[in-house]
Length: 218
Image (cartoon, rainbow, N blue to C red):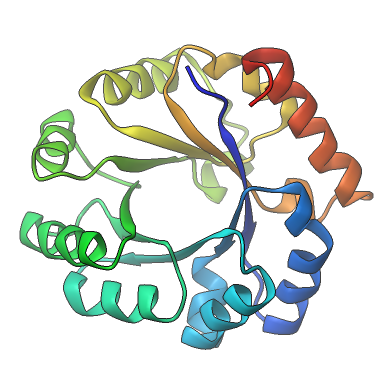
């Protein structure tokens, strides 16, 4: 398995705060995400501002789109995003149109696996050309004390075997990373674990050290 990337999720309600955290951490991460909360608060200006501030980084628009995939991919990638998320409940036609438009623009879509979905859905996404999905453990699950377990890992392994590259999110810490050594992980997504850490740069360094421990250097 290749070494996963580290993604900073910016789920701020104010753009200035998001840009401050991005400025602090952008040299310590591979991907910068305009989170859903930030996108809803600030719109396309969040994508444009992050692209201007982080010109060499992969930028994600975490819009969790359910309809109008082609149009919204055009807007997100036109504003500077490389990748945009669609929710797994989106109709297959929306996924296909979004994927085709992303390919035309040199980007990708990611399917956010949140709520109800099946492995047949995953095979259908893969069949139309989608190559990325996000395995998401939500805030409510984290708050209730749920931990990463064998069921999560088995589902991730099946998705990996289907051919999907997986981004993993939901209260991820450096200590969790060895659990995923046999999964085709594209990226680990961390928000509060980085931005809200007492020393964010040391927190990012801890992630990279554990990535090196498990997957080696790039």
